[in-house]
Length: 423
Ligand code: IMP
Image (tube, rainbow, N blue to C red; front, side, top):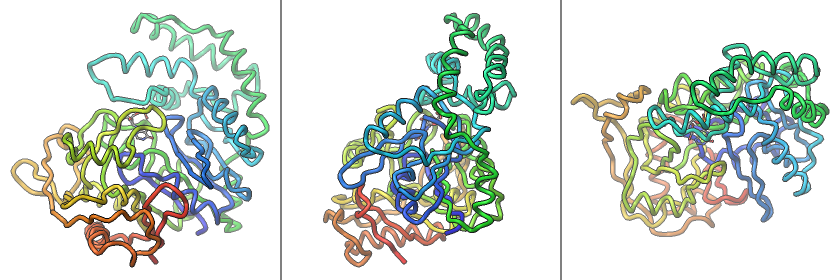
């Protein structure tokens, strides 16, 4: 394993949490590298369900050090709630580490995200967790980092400085109530003490671990098509979910990455606005949504649902350099007579296999489908490839052939046991 990255291959919600959990059994470190409390991972173990937004799900394994890398943005209010819930479920948080370079999602970021999303024009359909404004302040170099939080004077200075810029926008552009600097300083001084025991220098920690060849799992959030640069801009998140983001968000050098696993659903979903060529707005879509329980862990929103898009998946395989693919939620497709899979787009009267990561152009693409035979049987009890119906195996082979990446895991249900190892 050494350094293994788990990346969402679609628009997020690919059940990466379960795949990370499987690898975490063999890992020493499990590291979140991007995003913030917009993410939601659900892990089911021995009948218990654990919900994660910020804390790496690897914390469930007693030998794992769970690390929040510097590329993550952290909402400390949300963190407090999540930490308390996990503590109540008996999870030991002493193995948590939080990077000094992590940027904080502050109450004004959440407010600005909400105010911006309340405008009809230009809505992205964000999770309203303040992610975009936090990364914007980071790029504008007025962000507040965990390192600032550790010194009260420095924290006070940073908050005063940023509110001088953000309060006029909140008041004059959106007509909302400005935030009080002293109240924020008090609140965050309190959080500082809560997280102080976990704070560390993440790049040093991980560089040393990588030099000692200790097994590290990098846990991606969101998905490739939501990447700020390589996704369907502007309908993207504000960080880098792709494998390269694992380096940016942790300080681990690219030549240290040994395995890059893509995780893709057997179909496609998307939350929020933006083009989605294979979207199903009919009863087939409803059926997949209901069988797959396609409602957001973070926001509860019903997800948009569509057929598997191999044009997009092949793009994800190439952008990330997948060395293996995990296909999840295959069980959801049981019971369909025929299954459609998008193998090309029709764009400007021509046919192409190349993904078009430009939202207005992608919106004009029409999917070209191959039709495959479905299977009637439920497959959630299958534990080997041989136990799967022939047509389910043919479906997996079709995917492999189109994207030229071996499928090495197939998930047929939410629990750890409902997994098929393919090699
Ligand atoms: P933001 O990350 O909250 O700024 O939202 C930007 C876009 O990314 C919106 O379309 C969200 O629905 C989408 N998004 C953010 N996080 C997730 C996720 O964990 N799963 C799926 N979509 C997400």
